[in-house]
Image (cartoon, rainbow, N blue to C red; front, side, top):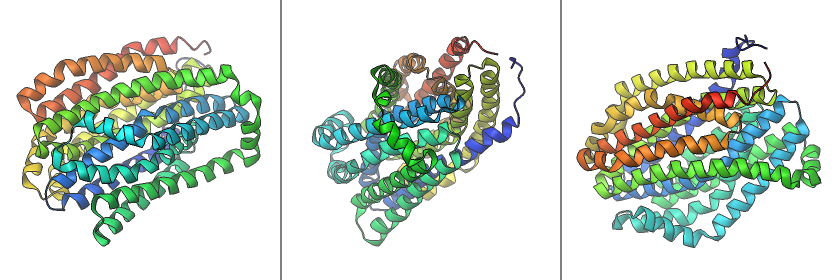
Length: 444
């Protein structure tokens, strides 16, 4: 296969993964929009600000261990590309065991974690009690969320994106319906939002485990779980090495977003609430563009497992094309409909005004950031964890340089300009490093 390789039905194969992934991923922030709508119509900004902080913390807790999905996807895709089902089962066994251990530790250490988070974020005083009520319930969903990461990694890595869609739809539809019932129907307020998320997370994990058992076969999974090869230190070391780099890279991403939230909180309750509304839009952008990143993980990862440079390069090219098209659509959509959506989400006029003022910056984010999301998928497929860490470190440094001056001068608008700088530098650093990944492949 040459560098100018022609793949069979490349666009169809990309969309077979990206399409279901985009639908599934986009459903998550749509549930966030429902939560925002429900809480945004309670009296005062404190409720919305508390849910903002609480949802962010658990997103970051799960996100910190997103390496469970990323490394699982990369390693599974490479083994799947070699048609090695036994190795796929061993990778899944290691990943699920790691997720269960980490999730259990977070539940056991929830007290110290809560106080650490409270000190780090320093939310407004009148939101602390509401945040605590949310935290005490939602923390029990963390093990399920981490297990679901592993399941999604397996399904994407084996190009079963439709099943990943089903898992996400179970999670998101259940979450949205329960939040409406618990908050509007039963009047449970912030605690109702947390309880709905708890139930939905565990239900989705159980559905996903059923898909894994059916796909690999219960016998194959049991064999992998009992095999000494699964727990071979050399194999575990490789998994931990990839996970370690991705974990540190994710911590840098979390640091950037945590600093953004802290700066918004320092600006006051209204900017913090407006930042939550805009952050929901940002999640929608990220998860939509991640659909093409998922396709890159599976398809370029399988090519990497087959040691085919030409096929790998072709999937990178097709992925960038479709990501760019999606980015332009996102930008146009937010430019046209962003303000009406903000007005629908909350009837608190100062929050509306602050969010709409920063909307033009957010609308431009997709065209600035699309390539960093796509390159993430490519790097994951190649299990290039060290390179992911290095490129994010460059972007984080640039972010820190501009964050405080821009925020001090332009407030919430400056805060979002700094985020645009961060994502733009991620993509640029990844593009510069990319040729080194190609050189790791020796086959045509």
